[in-house]
Image (tube, rainbow, N blue to C red; front, side, top):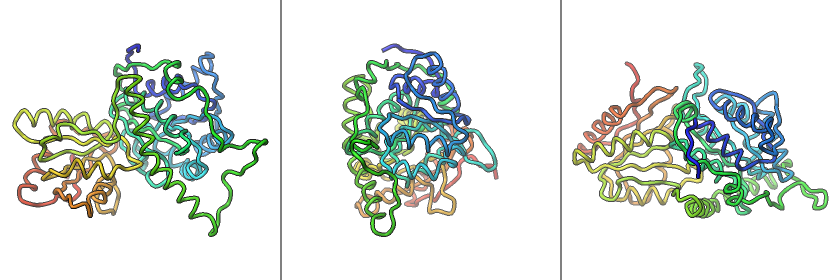
Length: 391
């Protein structure tokens, strides 16, 4: 595979180009605009066979995606922050209509106050919508996971939309080297055309997106739950196939230096990079510390969390999002739910970091670790703490 230097947005656009979707409907918003700008160039230059639908808003973009996917088209879009909020009504319809749209999210703060920089709150708010939710640490992951998302979502046991998150500016605008996947390789992996019987077809009439009142609504929602459960096996199979084809290994939840770890960071997205470097530096000082990285946030792999935490004295949750008024940050609530009743109960320190694009340097990770370890040695949990906020 050719190795090139590109931004994260370019890496996603090139992945979409390799897939050659039937329809893209999108509206520009920083920091994802480059994705659809690049893809529009591919359309204008005849490098894809895609129908590019320009719309007046993100609400219309997702509506167009649902319509196109409902007739069997392979569909891609992207957005960020307030754009996702404007789509919010339709993202629920996309899942309930079982339309396997792939959407790249250049994760960004949500106003207000207005801010165009990175955090994960936008995508974390998808957690109860029925969408499968993936996060990327670097530009290679953004490229690869965009392609894999089509195969995951379109699988007949799943038929759910998939969101692929990359941190705004930290990945979306930063240049890294990636191994670019060609169209031949991408289509060999996902299949040349989307094949599904769940589509509007005059020769096989059915209805999609109808009114469901008390008699059927719960059954329709339960089908989404069942599809999320089935998606776990599909995701594992897709990751395994990707490793066979490309040599790049992916897991829903990855571990680093966890074999003998007494303490561990748990995080996702680009935050895992600084956390991993911190682990290396602490290991050099004799600290038994590791890293748990969440790649697939929905469906959530509770059993894997329990397995990785079974020998830990303390777990340090680091998250670029927050649940205001809630019992902790968003990811840490899932972690606590996973551990509750499992018989595994490491002490827990919770940190909210990097909102609005604020940097959290490696020195900050050392500070979070030292503060957490001190509490753990005293037998204490640390409630949610906003790291780096000026007093």
